[in-house]
Amino acid sequence: MARKPKWATITPEELKKIERNKVEVKCGFCNGTGKDPFQLLSKLSTCQVCGGKGKVRVIGPTMKCNFCNGTGVQPYTTSRLHCLACGGVGLVTKIKNPKKCHKCGGTGIYPRRPNPVACHICKGQGMIAKNRGGG
Ligand SMILES: [Zn+2]
Ligand SMILES: [Zn+2]
Ligand SMILES: [Zn+2]
Image 1 (tube, helix red, strand yellow):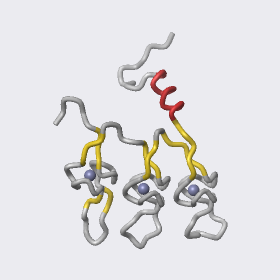
Image 2 (tube, helix red, strand yellow; image 1 turned 90 degrees about the vertical axis):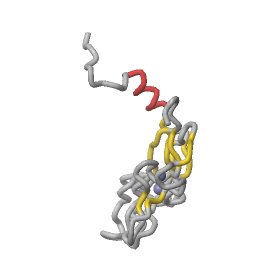
Image 3 (cartoon, helix red, strand yellow; image 1 turned 180 degrees about the vertical axis):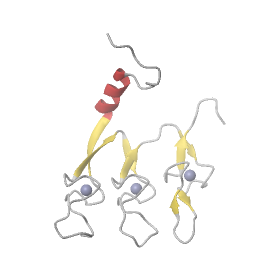
């Protein structure tokens, strides 16, 4: 019987639970078409976010990505990138017991110039999970 290594913080049971909680959602970046919405490489290039499937599996329950407003496209920039906060899906895993992010003041935006980026504390969501007992 294999013993669990010390570094393994997620037990197989927890991993199974995470897998069970995964829900299939429509890819926000390509809007479920599976094609690159900006046709950067060619008209037939596949969406880099979902790999052409049009669907992505994320851990549920989900909520709309605050940073890109569910579009899956990186805002505040002219480059046609997928949203770095949600990975281009347009949805993120819902934050339990959310509290306002102190770093960005709840906006989810780190005001870097010229292009604001997603706040690295809350990953663009403007809120973070409240830690029990923590401050
Ligand atoms: Zn896609
Ligand atoms: Zn996003
Ligand atoms: Zn923040």
